[in-house]
Length: 470
Image 1 (cartoon, rainbow, N blue to C red):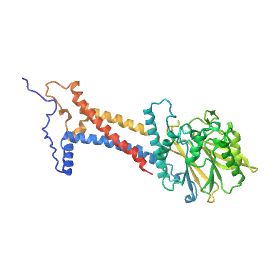
Image 2 (image 1 turned 135 degrees about the vertical axis):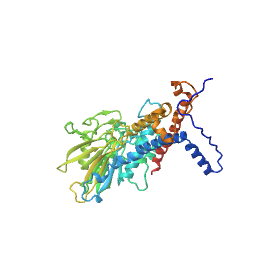
Image 3 (image 1 turned 120 degrees about the vertical axis):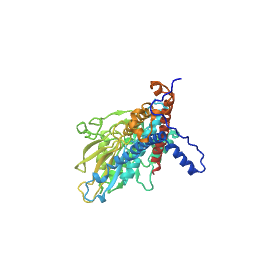
Image 4 (image 1 turned 30 degrees about the vertical axis):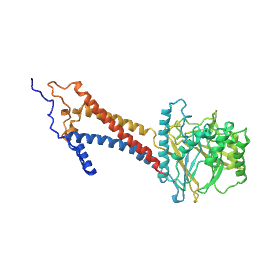
């Protein structure tokens, strides 16, 4: 019988580690020794630990560090131009969070819909936490469309959606948030408004039309979509009466700011939205089922001449738009600047979600306000990062198990010779079958399973701990 030969280095004798722990501390010591005691185990402990740490670090960067950094780039001190910034009153305006539901993507399988809700909710929650934590606005104002299918849901579906809303946009004690302006997805539009949805929204979020003072300015919130109803006096009279009462109280001693869900009408020659807009240059006038992209000209003119605003903030369109509205008030020519606020959600058809920041100051400044867009974190950056790390992890594990010679520089640091592992005493050279043997493949998939399990724990922590912030 010919003498058997070994390929590569002859494996060194390795003592088997016996586990007979006498105490928890002794057991942990023996376990650590088992994991790190031999060259093979030291190498595996190092590369598996490195992969798991890489996934934790990537998740930390994409779920915490990057969102926090991105929101912090909007810090008030970076763009406010007041001579005395201590006198500034700071407001964050949020538009169209529009919680996705079964109405958002009709026909999508239920499992995919739940996954979509989970991802979008997590994005909204992260944005909300870091807006409040890093920017610390004195007041936060929502501009409608809190839900996507709110107008269509019966109570048995709507109330769980309300719980979901309160979980995502939780409040600290004393936090000043105004979110009672309805959108067409919340209650319907014009003649198609759903009365029960309107009353339900008002019951849980507050008056639909109201005025309130903040930072020496008067905010005038108007349920403009109900003003466009022409069939039901119970719907159109409350906002119209509110506007007439405000007109009767003029003139006011504080600058006024109008809050409306649907943007004001603008003429074709005055419809350029500016460079911040993603989708073309103009916001076109379109009417459809349960929506209208601009208010009617008569309603727009009535609001301008009754309220006399210096600023108008609107939502609904999901994209940014800045236009001016010339009008006459008490015989004097006036101009109101309207800012349509980007959607804060990643699911509303824009690549760069955002909010609007407003700084108010009446301490002797010529202009009493300053405003800017604050872009939210890129919603697709985490998926790109996780994809790159995932592919890199698979390639690395394939090299470890199937092409160990390519990592010789790394393995030698651990005095580990992978070619000596699991080698049969044969006289022939290595074959493709040896390289892709069942044993090697089993070890490869075992490592993948361990990494996947670690990923589940890591992402579970980051996706749940963001809700631990109040």
